[in-house]
Image (tube, rainbow, N blue to C red):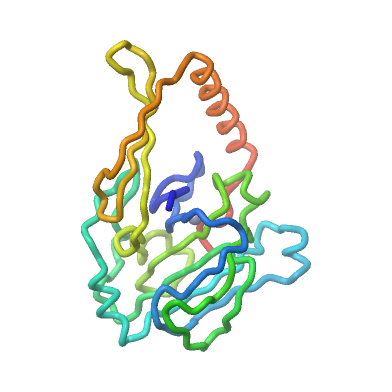
Length: 237
Ligand SMILES: [Zn+2]
């Protein structure tokens, strides 16, 4: 799955840090409980707010991992080397052996569960959406996605402190784009695709002719302008 923003990525020029992993998902994609657990928090917005796509209408779900599943989950932790500039492994107080581990799913369109409900791994809990993402997927994010977090305390507004990089536990395929100059001195675009273990599984290269170069520069400029106008609201809830 391609990523949009990684843990501690300062999103698109914003000053706040990003506290989860954005995983590409078309709006309306069924979302499942990753593990057995209990729903500890649900935030729903009024239909009115949703209709007007208001900034603070972020709908989300928090799932606490069941005690029986903890060991299995903790075993999933693997060695992960950050792939992107600024990305880190975990916040200073994240406790990987805590008995309380929480998964957070944000920007939901529909929510099928309620607080106190016990869910099993693989059970649908809602659908992905773009609630709480100002102006849909235009500003603040680069595409439709689900924002996913792993925390060892169910706290909010405390930055990265109790959170870890979800890539430590998830099997997410990532990619990295680089622009290099080849032997002929021409600009080349290199896409490195990383497999679940963090090793490069494929490299795609393409020459950029002068038109593409101009297009790329133009896109970057436009992106910069967009950032100045918008603010990202959904990073900390
Ligand atoms: Zn996010």
